[in-house]
Image (cartoon, rainbow, N blue to C red; front, top):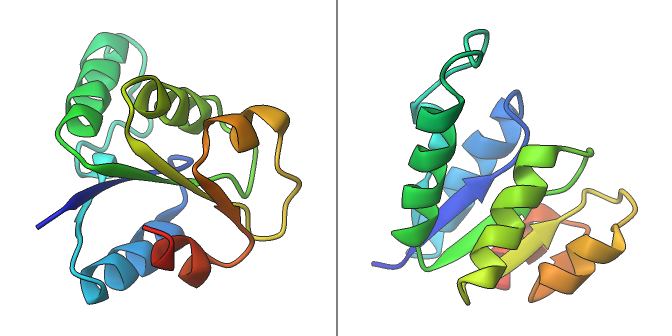
Length: 119
């Protein structure tokens, strides 16, 4: 079963829930980095957070990136996946797509359903 890393801002719980449902319906296994929830305790745990995220991305076939709001972590995850030759599909929710988002994405979509279909 192909695996997809769910990149997005730390508090995007609705996105992660809905994206997980949609990717499962399409035969993908969602990998949610927030299962290692460091919200409120990131200071001093930066290495563990980043290395865990990088390992998850390496173990996935694709990244679904939520770019509905500016988020440095999501941008770095998408860039890392792109640099490793992974499929990167971005969802904007109608927000403006930054040139870097477009550059590292195989495709950019306004609707989450369309983004998941592009996997």
